[in-house]
Image (cartoon, rainbow, N blue to C red):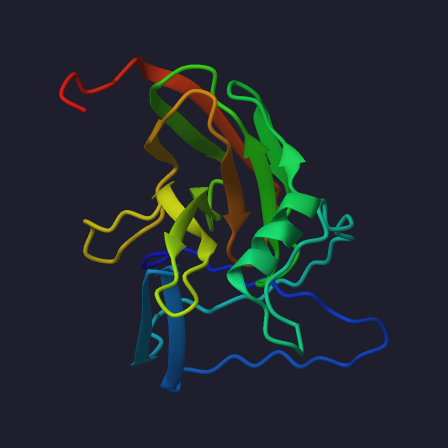
Length: 219
């Protein structure tokens, strides 16, 4: 939030475990990473609470979260996982999605990712909207499976390539937006992924064909 506005913090708790809440105006260091695998950033810095003539209030609430919808999450693997292993795991857990429908769920933890798979029926530019939650938007991206030839082994290697996302790379703070567009091809399989930080409120993603048939006559 901004000046005079509230802030929210979410975390997953464990039963029978004691937690402490600390409120301070001291400087605190932070490390924040954002972006996509091929275009990611890590930001380091310090932040300090501003002064206020108004007293603060702290409210704590809890909510029983549903089980992870697809069972897929980042991290936690002891062995090295290849890109093709990750694609296979996503294929096994991804839920089917149709353009024009709503994808809904919860981000149960910072490592949680919900994956969907869909096949557009028409070439065109598609619009994806995230009407909820109103705050702390999830990071949403469209991806496809691409291939390259490994020069050392001369084998074809598959990897996930990002097509579009709701990360606004042209804004100063690289904010997440509630609307983004993606150029998609008919009959091709794409992945829709939602992730981010733990949130009390469920997310909702909708889509529609915004501009039909964008095939370049010179391609």
